[in-house]
Image (tube, rainbow, N blue to C red; front, side, top):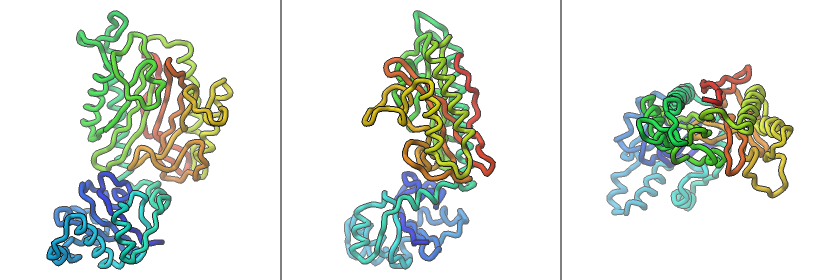
Length: 379
């Protein structure tokens, strides 16, 4: 096992948050040398990390000679580089693997001072795939937040009246923005938050991650794609449902029927050892059999805007999109403990689309569906 080095904060670095499951907003150094785990951090955070009880050696900047460095009168940037070099020498770091997000300036400085660094993102992605108990608990909480959010949104749609061709509520047009606000409120009440979310309608539903805007028509289609982050663990959920306000068109009803069939097919295929790319191929074949273009059934070089133009899914954890892949790129076999989103859909540009998505835990027996919400289409 190679030695490991990370310089980051735990808000933006999933690699570091996996090792130190605590919100630390300022960058610090984490190292594994000969299997021994250490951090070098300011005294403001030292006690909090030590109290995690993870067997991590917690050193402060004073332990690596910051007082001597301060006497040199270095500017902030030089001081930070020298502190990390001093920390590496104190911990015995001679060579290490780092994530591809490792700061380039720090990497240059450490290499110039004799420390060999090798960027290996696969190494870090693989060690995060099987979720810890803390992470899986956070993912489950994020799923409860998702369910609360979509329930609030659906209740708004059901409570609305039809006035002059649009939905109205309390005398005002019901807009995507109003639903988004209430969905976010529900997330917060369940200990989660979302920087982005999708509540789109009409033709917007055929445009990937279009967040959605404007008044909802009385006979509209509305798509919820929700991916909040649990605050305590920093882990995500990911979930999509699509609804028709009133009787749907035959075309959209068929999209929904096929998306549900594809989702069932994909979930049934999940088990350790199966490749995500093989699951994607099964979903694409199903859609192709019913006359729809997919990533695997199109002209070479053609960028799809209709049919099934995205992957069937992806891993979810400390990032909303992470390994393993469930798409057209040849992927690694699933492992027990992986968490993946499966999200088949069909679309027609300028008209609308349907997507259904659940979050799945890969178990020894197959799949546990973590997101629990009905698949009804017409409200």
